Amino acid sequence: QISEEDCVEAAQSVGGTLRHNQLIVGDWGRTPQGCFLQTYDKAIHFNTNPDAVNNGMFEPICIVQAEEAAYLIPHRYHGTKCIPGHNFSRNECIIAAKSLGGRLRNRRFITGNWASTPSGCFLEGGDKAIHFSTNPNGVNAGYFQPVCKPGEIKATLLPRGEDSKCADEHEYPEDECIAAGSAVGGTLRNGAFLIGSWSTTPHGCFLDPSDNAIHYGHNRNGVNMGVFQPICKSMATEVNLLPAEADFTCTEEQHFSEDDCIIAAASVGGVLRGGYLIAGSWDHAPPGCFIEAGDKAIHFNRIDGSNNGAFQSVCLDG
Image 1 (tube, rainbow, N blue to C red):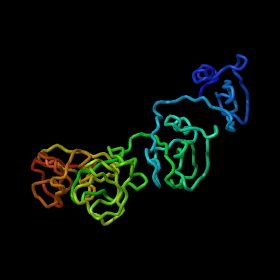
Image 2: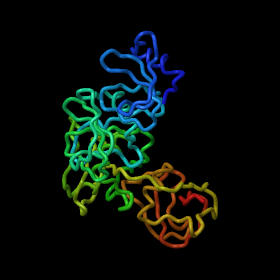
Image 3: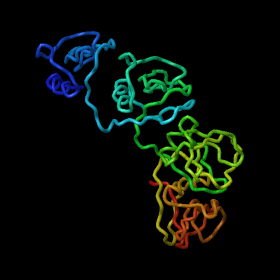
Image 4: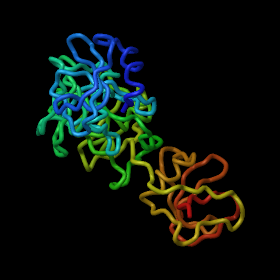
């Protein structure tokens, strides 16, 4: 909040005026806390009541912080919402939404507990009216645009490959797919989020690399024909790529499972040779997940082999 000392200068910078050349200070219950303008004549006021609630007739003057820049999910679809941890609070909502073209309908901040809107801060699609829903279980009916903190969405784009897919625990749900896809360079083909139940694509969120179009596949038995790139939640832990030296390998507790090998190795530069995870039993290679030093091909060794120096083990850091 802006202090009483700074209120006049801040309010004048956004068009405020001094009524009778005075800052009007009081202890009111139905105005905003702190520095604000009276709507009809832009008179500058300062309220010392910390428990006051704006009745909708006044315009608060707030400090805008650059780190709280907002991101508007660009298209309206059923279920879209902010990725967890990227929501604005009620107090932050107006400033964030106004920075993206939002407006106060009839000068009112519309709040409620709706079942058919996203939770948190959002815009109505028609007139860009700013809303805030306190219902954590609300599901966007498709007419609303969530206002989100951009932050870093930790998504991993897997390489193309036959049967390339996310492990179950690394899949994004449909309502987070647009945000995750956008974070790795995905776009909406002709403005559409492509959803289907295809047999030749991976289950879950993925890109078509021909144009980076974001898709979501509902078929749990779908098998990636090798054309598509799954979008997966990044590893919660750090991944460590060991040097290509003889006998260098992960300790027992640092091994990735075969299911997690592709996503872990891809995060440190691994690729799928011919579109496949190469799995086998080799005496001359390290056990578990590793990358061939020459072409960065991702492998998984199912036996306890010994690194001959041509391979780089992919390990859990720690």
